[in-house]
Length: 271
Image 1: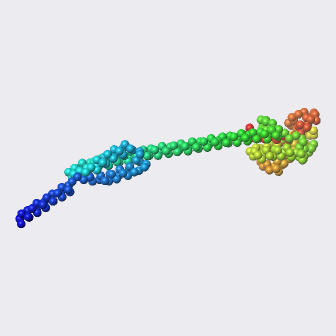
Image 2: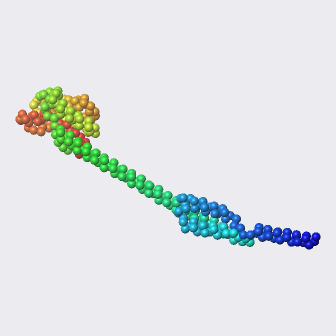
Image 3: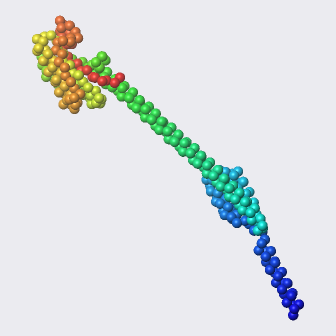
């Protein structure tokens, strides 16, 4: 009986030693799994994984070292390896994040540059279009002025309406006058920034007072015609010149005919 008991005890003690030996065998250090997960997350991030290849490779080596099983007596070494691995992973993440930010700033700068270029291009296109439109408008204006036989002077473009507008000694417009006046009205409607100074002139037949009043009435008749055709009154002014400004000699019939006229000065004409 004693022999059996002794053998049993020896077997039990041996089992305990074996279990103890198994319990204290090498294991991966605490924290190694967490640092592996952090590295895997970094490697799986499409925006970061390609921006720190060298650092991630170094972190991978550090994590593998940290995962190596160690005995309980080497716990401090395992803790140190895990710490180094954590630092390597954080360095890789920081490097990748910095490069990502730099790339994003560069992309933003490119987009801003493209936007500025597009804005300048649109502005240049508008300027070219406006210039072309202005040239076309100037050419059309000159054509209209030429049709009215306008002459360029220091005061502006001057259109001379001869005495065919009126009967002798009358301020009543003839029916035939509408052709010339309609051209003038059409011009003023097309170019709303223009203003007219309508001057009445006469020959020297009759008194100066009579001719001054006659020239005023004739200028006003032209003004009223244009106003009735739709030209704003503030764009039309009248001046009575009488016999003061002849353009030909009053000693001949043809000269007096030239002096009996209405001159329309188109002010602010753009050439």
